[in-house]
Image 1: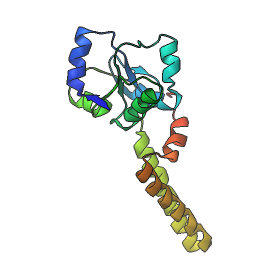
Image 2: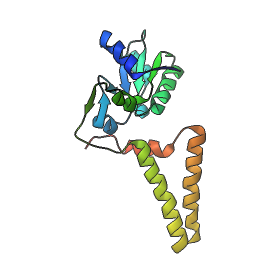
Image 3: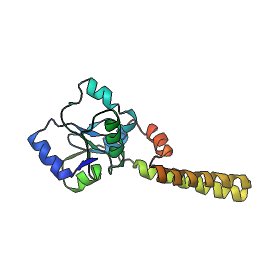
Image 4: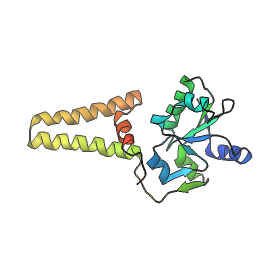
Length: 175
């Protein structure tokens, strides 16, 4: 998988401002802060073949992808590769690295929690609820903690988090 440093991409964009840069985070995350001139297409709605067929993206040049830190951008690049477009390039470190490099960003009026943080809060809440309910209501509730723990282990092994997918569907529209 090809990658590019934020500063290197910024230099390319100065010379070729029309290079496609896609931010695959949720619209709420994008609205909080995004690299200029990134365009938002959330990972769960990304359809590379449709974008290429509609001529929204050029077939003969690289497409640059970023998210918060790079994990979702890698998944987007894999989607492009599966659909026969191997020229997707992941921006190393995502929007956080772009911002830390002092490159131009647009900030919205809203402040949101990252998807990763929401997942940690939700998983922790499930574990804590299972322990409290198991201790005071019925021992069967300990299974809730076991279920959350097993889900986290599974997500770590296969690098796919169903909880993140569910939470991202509820964080689509900026407030």
